[in-house]
Length: 432
Image (cartoon, rainbow, N blue to C red; front, side, top):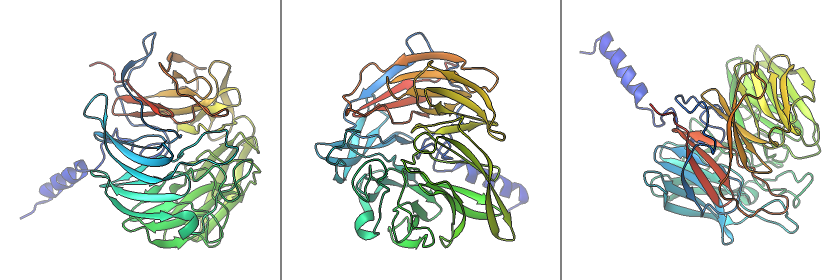
């Protein structure tokens, strides 16, 4: 006989049996797709030369994909000798050994490309499977233990997909498919772009199309989709060259849109919090927006809460910690009040512009020009309170306009930094 007490125990055990542990990093920008880790017990300051370098992997290939980390496996994509691969590394050994690799397609490039070859999208891990996107639009699902292919879809051939080519790249291709796959329940949410629908939901078990956003047919941007619930309606928020849009999770209907046309690259992933959506541009429309999305009897309305030019983020994304938004802005770094748009502080020329992630109350800031990494307190009352910095011990050869664009990742007490074929792993766990 099952008693109420036994039910409580069983429920607790079920909660403990989750496939991911708290410190894993299964997708782009982490478990909640916000680049804020829940991990604790990390170093609060770094030694003069930075944290301890545990290992360097030197065969990651060309590209800007970030690592996805689950348990003792790390997943990454890269271009090697003319082809793009998804590969898995065994983290139980140091330096890690490659467990398997799967060919995605030809290495992305085009005539006149001075920005860098290779894949741009971070893989996504869900249960026993990994989902990876090649820059030419090949989406592949493989078994994470063996690398055995489950299915693949080619966006331009199978779904008439298109990428916005504003400012660079070939027609309908631009700089390649760059957003990261999103798993939501049984659906793989992706952005093929084009006349059949900007957004698509695929059955994650076989790659079959469940729906397309027929009322929104823009070309794909470089920004990744996120999931949100507004007015008890589950939906996907995307940022394109036309602005923001909310797409219904069940049928792919256009629930709302907020026009903000941009004649340049759209890269940063939006942040959703308390029925508001925040995003920032550096290219084209300089500045940031906070958009309020309200719901009334199943109908949605998106209006501007503020629009200013005080946060101008290039490619490195923004993070929300408490009520403060942090990010690279123009020539420096800025902390802004999320609700009001008021600047808490700005620090110029302390560190070049770049990308960031947040863990245990600290920002890990990665300079896109020099490859310098700084540890900074995530505190709106302390102006650039730096607790250490270091430079990468070795640097890859870049394309003429290429930079250190891969976002830093903190997972399971380790800091991961990529520079093309070089992947570095540092110990950032505080001693007990």
